[in-house]
Image (cartoon, rainbow over all chains, first blue to last red; front, side):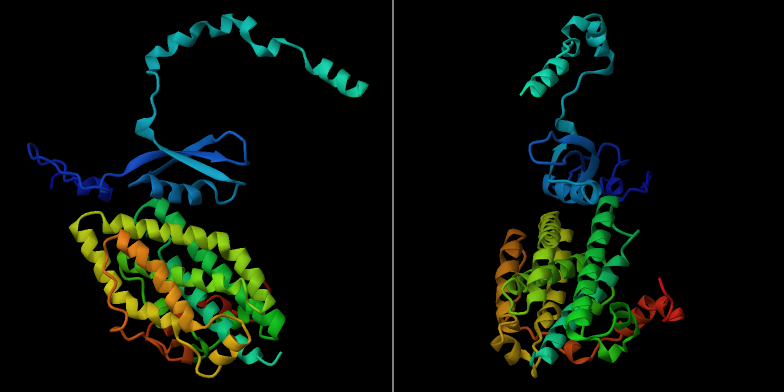
Length: 122
Length: 254
């Protein structure tokens, strides 16, 4: 074999024999899964990293020890990275004019003062 | 309490199993098949040592036993009551995983039964370890199903691992001839025979999903002896290594 890899998963794929049909056995081809962490009920799941796993269940099993061992956690999501649809980097120009449209920002409205005043009046 | 000796016997065999298997599984740290699994398996090994410590503490605080560290590290091989299953060297990952699966399922039915124990410290401990054990068995089940369905070689190795491990695992349920009747009568736990049945009911559905054949349990001879202090040749070297630092100075304060 011409291209021994340090990663046994790569070696199992028996790459390098040009022309041969490669049959990948179920479970042999590990995927990358993105991990999302929820620190309390009702909160957003936040992206915290990724794990390699042969299927979604083991991805969840691995994610639990990788990302929920120390920090408070009530739930995790995993999703195959390949299933995430994203814009191309060169499409960044679609977002370019956002900065000129600050009138769309919700941050322009000063409501905290009014809210505080209302709270005090009670 | 009149059944102190019986309680001690039960606690020591449970704790010794946890300590020895925790130590064995920790030998995989840094050598696991993939990084994610290395971390998960090491973390569960630590949990096991934590369970052993909690049990040794009950022995120390509720039953007048020795300090947990001294009890774990200074005892002679003969005084250990661990089963042969947990003493064996790790071998390859198929054996280690199968042992992990069979042991943690057994641990789960045991702690579940202790939720209704007449011995209050058992009730508290069983509640405390419930979540950890849920994760351990989820991990074990997922791996057994994954590897048994991952091609011919993988399937054959898992079946062989099961065949080689089942009689050893059945040895977990070795009852004490002296104390078993007392423990059952005092409602400390339902007894080894009952747990053995519950355990088989628990592992069977996972093995079916994995297309693995459970050997006919009426034909196997459970590997007993550990609970009476008879051990394999592998326990003594393990104890020596495990207690190496502690025994440099047994009076040192950590």
